[in-house]
Length: 113
Length: 112
Image (cartoon, rainbow over all chains, first blue to last red; front, side):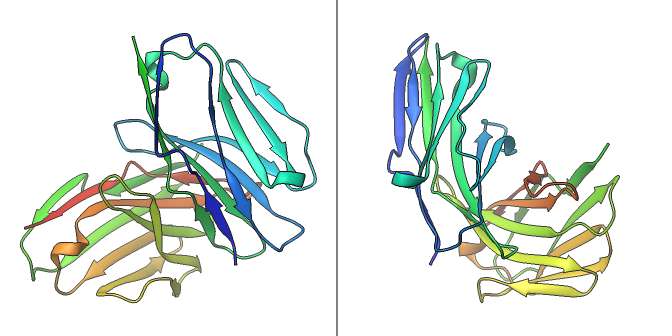
């Protein structure tokens, strides 16, 4: 069975702090994709990143970075120098050979000014 | 460019009333389409997905149904709403050259 676990329900940090959101996944497929989405208060999910199972290279995009480690089945997301605008719910998701996407339960990030 | 629309944006309905939510995608053809529900403070629950016109797969047996009458149109329906149907309904589609899902703005449904 496939599963995505985001153990952190809610995280609060002070602006300019770094914060890491954890994501652990389970799958028996050798080919799969991992995603992160951001859901701001408006509700619409915004796509942030996609990684495939054959590419463990870490990625950095501005203040965002992602650490994909197959050995620990983790795909963690770090925000450097957090800002109030980063406050949102963040979802990790897994997709493989089927058309179904498995989402984690989300982590609510609160960045305090 | 591709865009996805959902309407209505918000809806308040009495228990037992019917429901029809619509999702349309522009700028692409033959997308895979998805309906999700998000209860307050919860994660996303996949309700239905469709790989083509008239092809619907149901993930959760309940009083909701979905239809795809046209290539870029996906409709979520109910004959009689329950209180537990309240939530935020999101439609999503997959881009042809990748498999990341893109989401619509959502419909916030309150059943009283």
